[in-house]
Image: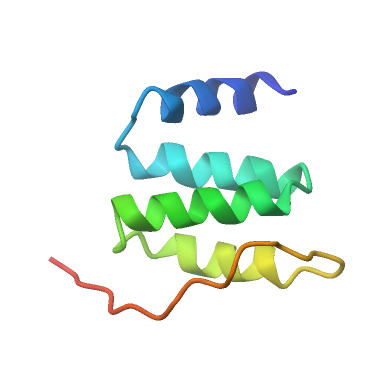
Length: 83
């Protein structure tokens, strides 16, 4: 396990509400080909901050990458509320 992945897991397990921590963790999982973990992390990020726009593109790319078969259902449609 990389140091970055371990650090991001620690931050999110401690209850971080920083959207970037969750986003970076999901990307680390995706880069490690841990698609299910990546999708679950994107879903957790969406629950924390549905307005974090980069998440939607990267979640879609992760879910539809060649050879990926995430077990989690796709994200249901939801309006993005901007402030």
